[in-house]
Length: 242
Ligand code: GTP
Ligand code: MG
Image 1 (cartoon, rainbow, N blue to C red):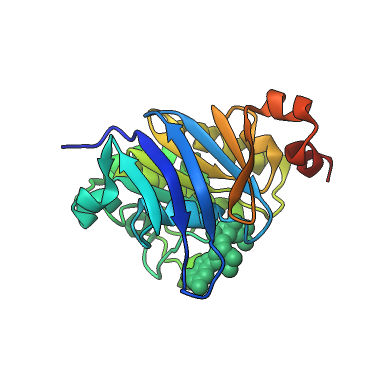
Image 2: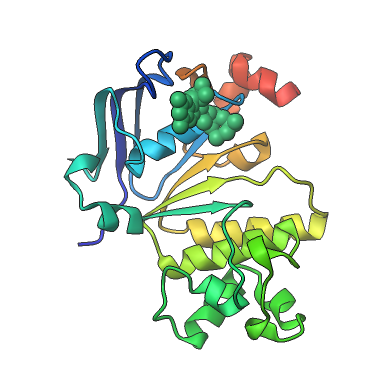
C-alpha cells in the first residue's frame, strides 16, 4: 500500500494560535506524483508550514490536504510519515557510525544496500577516505563532517528510506564548486520518481521545477515556471535580482 505521492492542497488556511494571523491563506496547488514543486519566499512566508501540513504536524484550519486523493487525516500517521522524507543541511545525524547514520530509519538495510545508496548520493568516496570508512564514528550532530558531506549522508539515508514524497530544504551555506556539483548530482538521483518539494533559498535550484509558488505572508502571490516568472517581472523577478 505504498502511496504514489500525488499531493493536493485545496483552499488551505492555517493558524497556529487563536490570536495569531493566518500563517497560510487560501493555499491551493496540485502536484501530481513525481513532479517538482518549488516554494520560495522571505523568512516567515509559510514554506515550512506547508510541509508540516503534509506530515500532519499541524492541522489546517480550513481546506483539504490530500495525498493520492485521500485526506491526510485518514492515513495511519506512521505510514504517512514513512512516505515523506526530508533532506536538509540540518538533517539530524547521530553519534554513531556513518553506516548506522545512513541506515537510520531502515535498520534492516544490508551493508551492500548502504554502500549502493552512498554511491548514488556521491558520498562513497569521502566515506572511504575517513579513518574507519563506513565504521567511522561521527561526533554529535555529525561533527567531523562538512556541511556538504552531511547533506550527502542525509541524501543517502533518504535513498534507502525510499519515500514517495521528498522535502528538500536547500542548503544556504557556501560550498566549493566541486561539492556543489556532487550535491546537485546526488539530489538528481534522490528526486527520481518522487514528488519533490524544494524549499529554495537560491533560485538556481528552481529552474527545473514543474511549478513554483512564490509566498508572501502566507499567501501565494505568484506561481508558474521559472522562465514564465522571470518574464512576469513580479516578486520572483525581484528575488532573482537580489
Ligand atoms: P523560513 O524558514 O524562515 O524561511 O520561513 P518559512 O517560510 O518556512 O515560514 P514558516 O512556515 O516557518 O512560518 C510562517 C508563519 O508561521 C510565521 O509567521 C511564523 O512565525 C509562524 N509559525 C511557524 N511555526 C510556528 C509555530 O510552531 N507556532 C506559532 N505560533 N507560529 C508559528
Ligand atoms: Mg522554514
